[in-house]
Length: 107
Image (cartoon, rainbow, N blue to C red; front, side):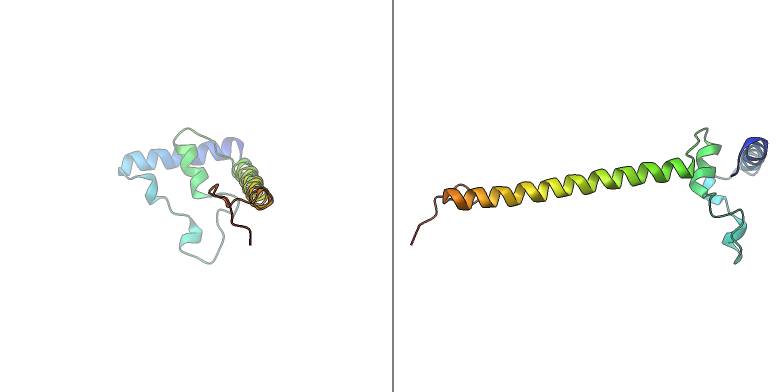
């Protein structure tokens, strides 16, 4: 993984060039943007490099874990809502009312 002095030096050079050339981080390009190669590797994302330049360190592995955890929480919440909705419908049917609380006419 990209770490230590190499990472710090690359980030320092990119920051210095951005300041010297007066360009924003949207101008950062990787070799893979112009080639079929994967340089500097698929584990290094532009978002991560940008976060390092701005003094944050959004490690892509940790970021992926956070996204996966969030996705799982959303999935659990959706399942809970769906179960609650089904239970509400069953309860309303049992009590002879519709979901808005109106008494159903029994025929």
